[in-house]
Structure formats: structure tokens, C-alpha cells
View 1 (cartoon, rainbow, N blue to C red):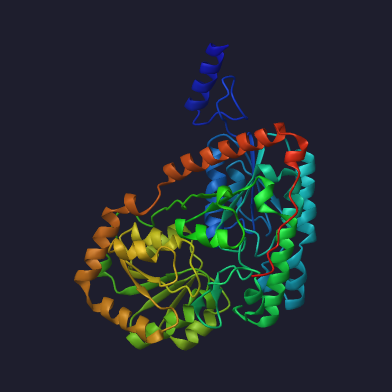
View 2 (view 1 turned 90 degrees about the horizontal axis):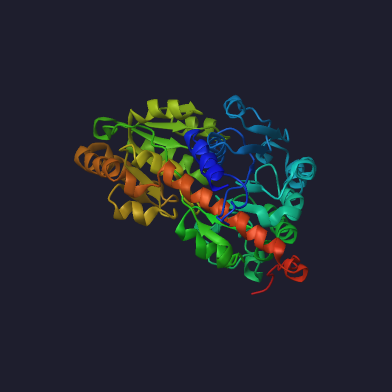
Length: 459
């Protein structure tokens, strides 16, 4: 029997695959046979979707059965060709809907809940794991209603703070300051902190209460993955106990395998959604004042506003990895002026490890380590003058740009988690989750009952 096990392991290894299942004959933890990834998007339109798609292809390459449940229309031929089964709800981003429609679907997306519940009922097994990447833009808290029967086999990556904070940013957008309040406390309920209006804040509070009712993280057996160590205290403040949180930084795929000679380039760069919370209008005005060239890569409602503020700005639209590599070759410095708490900023590390210095927001969780490594500067994303002066200084200081460029490229392995290390760590988390789920199933029924959701409303 041991010989057969050894031969089976060798065959899996030679095929580039991993052993699956709950345990082997010796009791060693093993991977799930099937993983269902859940995300709003199936196209790489933002950081969470980039990581979710990388997650899917990594698992498929390792021989696991992978299904991808998404809120959008499932338009990703590369994903399908990699052997991943797609399940698309066929809905649009809430921001592209009318306010009334966004309110209704954002609270409970009935088609999403129905389709996910059907998928679970028809195909779930004890060896299936569910990994949620993002849900706030399309899928809504309804997915947690569908996931309740299998919650002890769920892993949730916190790409933002929506699992803890109603507005998702732990940020008072009206004051332009980080929020120090406890989510859903009386002071939180009374704060007009939403980026748009008090009415939308009220809607977000209702959605957060609903999500907590549908999914009590502390008693469900699920695991929450924070993408940076700095997130942990804030997740705990929002009611997520420390024992269910693990930290796994995002993997970084550099834009260039060779160092970008940033000191020889002139153009500054922004990559991301062209929305208010990303600070794009501030950057357009600052670049105009500093009289420096700037390129905006991404899509969003503010593209025309950027062009109106700074006609000299280049609006390049969405770019895939190959397109970003071409733009990066002409870039002097990346600017990330996010106007809320940035949990990780994947694009910052993709730039740094390519040899492109970064101007990072003062509110980014990774700000201090970027400054300590000497690979970038920081800015207040609410002060146009300060950013303008920073752009003007770096536009003429080739020596400083060169120094930061060399440091970033030289220390790329220290600055970022490699894909191999990320894969190894994530697979180990999957093993632990499956083992924990198995242990919960063996426990007495009284110990396995879901605790009533605890919704802190006072404080």
C-alpha cells in the first residue's frame, strides 16, 4: 500500500500536480479536491480581481478542480481555456446602475444568491473549499446567505475593510482623515463619513448589519485573510476575532524583468480606477501645476474630468500586463494618491520591483515600509500643492530617481512575496481550513451550532 502511495505521489509530482483530499493514510493534511473561487469580476479590472484570477490559474495548473463564480458576465476566454469552469451571474457593477437599483441589488442580489445556492446544492462535497475574494461591487451580502451551510470550508480574503467597516475604508471621506471609531458604534452611526452622502452612509450601515446577520465570522469556522499586517487591528476593531485572521500578502508580478531606467524617463504614471477615491483629479491638477507629463492607465467615470483639468494628460484606458509593461518602460515614477486607507496597493509593488519609484499616499498601510526601504516618497492626497512640489522635484532630480530605482529592483525579493511563496502559503492555509472543517464535523452537535450573530451597536 505504501508503494502505491509513493508511486501516486511521484506521478502527481511529475505532472506538476499536488495530492488532494482531506488526509492521506498517515493522517497528513491534504488539499481539497475542488475549489470554488468567488469574486465580483472575472476580468483583471482591479487588485482583487487580478489576485482572484491568479488564484484560479495557479490551482488549475496544479491539477485541482477549479470553478469560478463571478458577478459579471464571465467574459474571460483565457480562464476557460485553463480548465476553469465559469459561473457568471450576468450583472453590472453597482456604480453603473441607477441609485434605486444599486440600493436594492447592493443589499441582496437575488440572482447571485440563487445561482450560488444552486451550485452548492448540486455539486458540494466534504472535499470542496470556497474562497471569497470580493463581493461588494456586484454580488452583495447575499452570497453569505448561500454559503451558510458550508461556512466552515470558507476562506475570505479581505482586500478592503468591508468585512469590518460600513464604508469599506475606515476613513472619514468628508474630513479627509482616517476613522478611529468602532464600526456600528453610536459615534459611527452618527458620522457623515461616506464619500458621497449621508443617505448612502445609511444604506451602507444597513448592508453591514445584514452581512453580519448572514455571516457571524466568529462562530462560523471561516478564515479571514488580511493582505497586510497593518489590517489586523482594524479588522479586530470591526468585530473579527484575532484567532480567525491570517496574514497573506498578495503576490507581486513585476511589470518588467529588467530594471526600468526610470532616471531616463520623463512621464509620471497612475494605474487604477479613474474614481474620486483614487485621487485622480488631485493628480491631474498637481501634474498641471508642476508642468510634468502624466499618463492615466485605467477606466472610470472621471476620464473626461481629468482631460478637462489637464488637457496634456494622456488617458491610456485599460491595459493588460503586456500593455503595462510597455507603459512602464517609459515611466519615471508611479503615483498612488489614494484618498482612503490603502490595504496593500498591488500596483505600487509591481512598479517598485520593476525599478520604478513610487509616490504613495500617506494613508496606505504600506507607506512606512516603502519610505524605510528608500524606494519612494509619500503625499497627502488632499493637498494639491504638496503633491505638485513633489512631482516638480522628482522631475529634475535624476540622481534621486536612479537611487530609488536601483534599490527597488535590487531588493525586489525583500519587498514583495514571490508567486511561489504565495502559492505555498495559500495551499497550506487551504490544508489547515479543510482539517479544521473536518474537526468541527467530528465535534458534538452542540459545539457546532452557529452562534447568533453579534452586532455591536453601542459604544
